[in-house]
Image 1: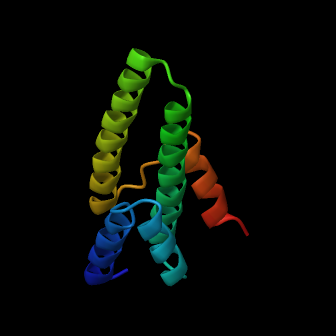
Image 2 (image 1 turned 90 degrees about the horizontal axis):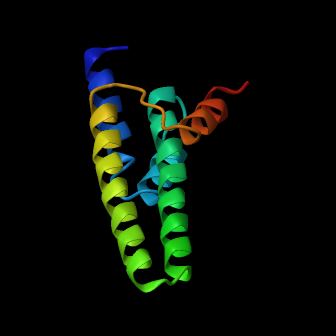
Length: 111
């Protein structure tokens, strides 16, 4: 892989997390060959869907103080994880989230 292609891959992989899961879907559909980009795009899809699901569940469970704290913790955790995932992808690291990363890995590298 040339240096220029490697740099393009890391930027594309990082951008796949920008508006998860939507940019993940976009880059997963566009990129057909680069497994690094496809892995991060698929993990972005799973990450985005998980965060949306957690937010829906936390809004359904309504216990005044606990719901606010839980919602804040989910948002803070999602933000920190989002920055970490973009940083790792930009630095050409294939960082796997627990459980979600394994699913992405299996999906991308299955024969």
